[in-house]
Image 1 (cartoon, helix red, strand yellow):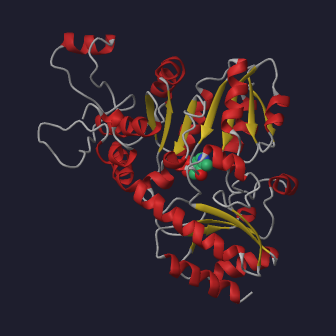
Image 2 (tube, rainbow, N blue to C red; image 1 turned 45 degrees about the horizontal axis):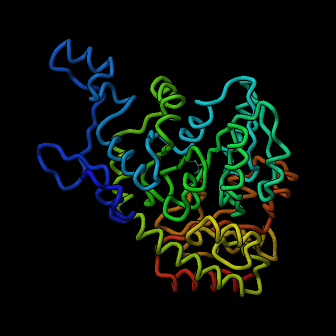
Image 3 (tube, rainbow, N blue to C red; image 1 turned 180 degrees about the horizontal axis):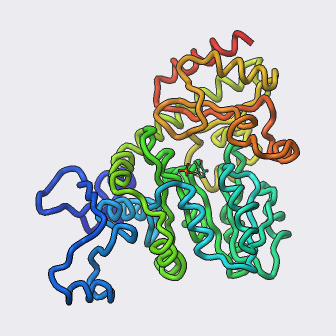
Length: 394
Ligand SMILES: *Cc1c(COP(=O)(O)O)cnc(C)c1O
């Protein structure tokens, strides 16, 4: 396949980036190898000089990972990518590779727990200053800028509140300063939001989520233009070693093939379940990027091409009602994971966001009665009946 750029996403996700071996296999091969052999000492020298583009060592690059990286680039509209062992390896590499002591980062404060730890705890240990802002208002990013601001970071929609950030607006601020915007695009998936097209410089994914989508392996990926990867990520990645296992790259390739089918079903399930929850007397409020009552519906419509596979909602009965409902669910399982074929529900205040102070949780809107639901691909009627039963006992 050479002209993949003209193909549509669902086609690219099945065929893109595939170089077949001499055997002509239908499915991508798993190259579980650490290293590569050279025909001669001269060939080894040429490869190390960069005069011959072949592989050198699996920590740098390897054939199955290469297919995954190329396919992700086609999907994202990026020039280059590096596949990582987890989403956090992707996020931390995307930040650390381009920051030095004395630099400053501005980040939206509504973040996946580990992302928040990297920004507000890890970076300062290395002399990198960081400021967390309420990302719902673009003016807060602008007000936090310092002369040494080098990077902006955000998640949109954010975990677990599903609030959104104006990506094009932050990208514009970054460009005015010559700074870079890194977007964690996990919640939107590459199908529903294209941060690079909106002006972001770097996109990071936890491929563990929708890209695998079937609960099997961890993975991640960082995507950008060739100049940024060459200047910042290339050496960092080679020498710190966050590389993805080729077996997991293969698993993720199988995930990509069915990504549009799964995300379409999950989004449609999420819309229908949210509509049911919004009308239920035990529910205080729902937050869903696909609904007109989302507090930032206008930004959602501008930068996202669909709703979401996740919904956040709050029960009137607080924590005890949230626990009772979770315990009464029979189809939907209690898990802090997301993006899976199975519907999963979590109570952020006591799990993913338990390490935050009460004030930080209040600021973010993580109320005691709030739960985050990740929709799977089950029959939607079974999901609605599950909630109907679990809520009727409250
Ligand atoms: C899960 C997640 C991560 C971390 O990914 P891992 O694969 O678990 O390391 C980062 N950001 C967001 C938004 C996530 O949901």
